Structures are given as C-alpha cells and as structure tokens.
Image 1 (cartoon, rainbow, N blue to C red):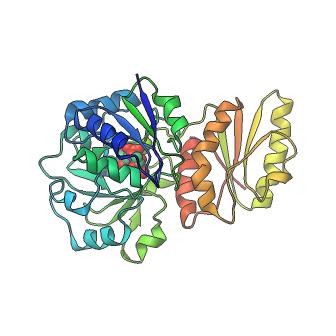
Image 2 (image 1 turned 60 degrees about the vertical axis):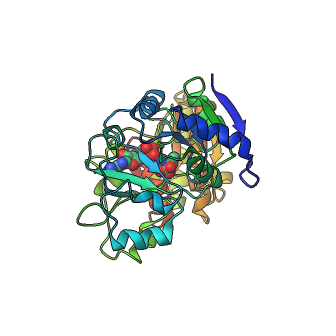
Length: 346
Ligand code: TXA
Ligand code: MG
C-alpha cells in the first residue's frame, strides 16, 4: 500500500519527514514535491532501489536519472571534476530548477546513467525536497513522478493517479510552482549545451555562458536528441492534440473554425486557451492554462491543463502556442511533444 502524508512546506513536520527519509534510506520509493514537478525518489547509490523507480514508471532503461543533492559539498563524490564555469553556474542558480550534466565519478551506479559516462545532478530549492534529501543522507535519484509518457505531476493528486499502489509513500506538499521540469545543461562536453529548456532560460544562461547552444531537437521532432529522455513521446494527453502558432488573432480564428468543423463531424473538442483569449471561443470545452502576459502562469498550469482535458474526455485538443523567447521555449518544447509534433503554423 502507498502511504500518503501531508506536509506544509512552511511548517515542516519533522517526525513525518524522518519516516520518509527512513524509507529512502532502506531502499524504498517516495514521491515528493520539488519547485518544478513531483519527483519519484529512491537512494541513488542503491541499484535495487533505483530499479523500483523504473518499474513504477514503466520507464525505458536507456533513459538516465537525475541525482538530487541538498548541498554543493555532496557533489564532490559524485562527479569527476567541477570546472570553474560549473562553480559559477551553481553559485548563481542553485538551489533551483537547473540540472547540470557532469562527467561521472566511479561511485555512480550504471543504472543511474543508463551506461553514459556523464551524470545529471540537481539541487532543488523546495524545502520539502531539501529536507528529504538531507534526512535520507544519500543523493536521491528522482525522475518526474508520472507514468512514463504521461504529463509530469504538479500536485499530489496527479502522483496518486499514476503511482498509487506502486510506491511506498507520497508526500503531499501542495502544488509545485514552476510546473515544468528543470533546465538540463550539459557542461560535460566541449560546448555548453541546453538539452532540455526550463525556467532557467537560454537568456539567463547566456549572460554567464556566451558560447552556449541549444540542442537542435528541442523544437524539432525529426532531430535525434542528445538527452536520451527527450526522444520518447512525452506529456501525452489521451486525446490527439494540435498546436497552433503565429499571430494570436489568427490562432483564435483558426481554432474557432476548426472547432465548428470538428463538432459537426461528431468530435468533442477541447480548447487550450489563455486569459486574454478565453472569451473569444464560441464552442468547445475551453480550459485556460494561464496568461499570455505572464507566461510563468502557463508554465505552472500546463501539465495540469493537459490532465484536465483527459478528465473532460475530449477527443481532440486545439492548443494556442506562445512566443519562443525566455520561458516560452520551455512551454513550446513541452507542447510540441504533447502534440506529437502536430503543429499548424499560421
Ligand atoms: O525538474 C526535474 O528535473 C524533475 C524533478 C523531479 O527534479 N526531474 C525530472 O527527471 O524531470 P526526468 O527523469 O523526468 O528527466 C531527466 C532528464 C531526461 O530527459 C534524461 O534523459 C536527462 O534528464 N538526463 C539524465 N541524465 C543524463 C545524462 N547523463 N546525459 C544527458 N541527459 C541526461
Ligand atoms: Mg520525466
């Protein structure tokens, strides 16, 4: 059975957290909140414990995991070297929604890296995550706490939906803030590369890393990604999803005409709208993801919105795209994947 505990992140119940830490220590699996999405955590140095994560998620074994630490000192044992650049980046962005890829040290089990020579490390800023890592006394391996292929969980209900009965404990710490998974930055090779965009944006990182590049697969589904996890169908709603990009007035018009046609052909249509456009839709199940003027709100609600369309049982989702700068890149990366590459540029 899965035990569900509620923890208030601004008044953490130490006794319950010790229980959670003990589960991790003794080889169990605990889902916990981070500032990005919920993670499915186990002792990252214990192969058998990590196996349970792959089983619970149904995750392909060639997709490596992120190790979560609670202080920068814990890094030394886990990686081969920490460059000056890595030091600068960690100082600026940790704790926070940034994962860094390093050359791995010998103590990292193969199951973590899926056989790669590099390892992904992140120090989250969420107080419950930090407390869990520190109480368990080990680096915590944690992918997003969803069934492989499904949208990442941004609240405990999502976790329970996917993981109930498959893991030892869920720590319900409320909704996560950022809502999209961490930026993955590869500092293990010649050229610093963003493998997965997130709330720490290309623009943020460029200030310190002028020669940084983005993996070409981020928005193009025909390019093979450098990050193994990026090649799988992800964030998939149950319904088919089509993403519309271009001028917002054109998007609204096109979604309105498409919705009418689809309804005539007997389909239940969902529209992923925004605060600014929601009143312009005449038919369909309209769900607002957030505000176009404050795209962090769209990031924060995106995965929940996709799950809400599942619960509304629509046959097809027509979704508004956003601009590609700053957090827009991360939003469009997830939306492109959710749509399985079905994009209409207007
Ligand atoms: O925000 C997050 O990062 C969340 C929370 C729980 O911390 N975790 C998360 O983990 O998103 P996961 O497993 O769903 O995504 C990890 C990504 C995958 O795309 C994986 O392929 C990539 O990081 N990755 C892990 N190790 C890697 C490595 N050594 N080289 C390249 N990519 C790596
Ligand atoms: Mg994931």
